[in-house]
Length: 312
Image 1 (tube, rainbow, N blue to C red):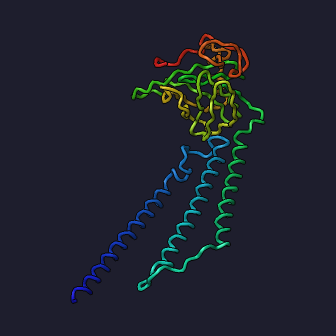
Image 2: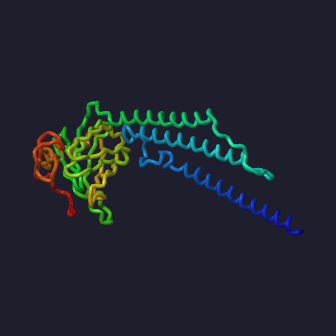
Image 3: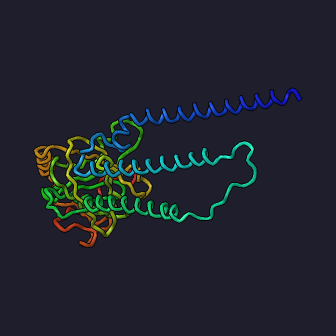
């Protein structure tokens, strides 16, 4: 009889200890998340860029990304708060027995949790559709037009306005430094509107420059296009983001955003090297007649299939 109060006291201390540890763990987790949110990555929405103005589109993409996550976080906080409130307010009290009063339905509440999610989806859809319409708008007159030709497993670049081309070779990922210097480099003039014409010579690929926060499929028999204005001079990485075969991971390229003067100089260098004309962008690895997958214009056929790397 004398041990029962002591056991109850010990159990109370144990429960208090578990509660304290849980509270400390929760506070620690909140603190870690708060400190992590102070990092530089969080300032840019955990996106792979250092400047929201890398292109004329990146700021819009970052804003809609961050806005979506802020809205999701607010909804999460509200839901978590309501869950905790229900757990605390409607918990079973000491001495209570039996089932609590059951509620079959609540019309206002059901309307609320039906209408509010619909409104949220509509708002997010509107922002997304508006941003997408701006991203794929090709109505403006471009300053420069570049035909990017994807092939297993490299890239060719046809600078149509300058009537010159550059042959891409497959990257050799051997674990040694200096791989970047062997990759094809796409030159873009800063501050100029560039229109990309994307074509494939063999299978499905995808043209992706992560720093630009935009990618587009490159499909055989189809000419996909988009426009962008690079705004920050620098060197970026590009890659194929569509599984296209055995050496998909080595289908890499560099992107050099340079001043318009340096861009014109590079075009002149390609012309001096005899790279005049346009590489074949039609279907197949050998010369074929002009078809749906080709960009019209003068065609250079002798170099179109070179430079694919020793693994091709």
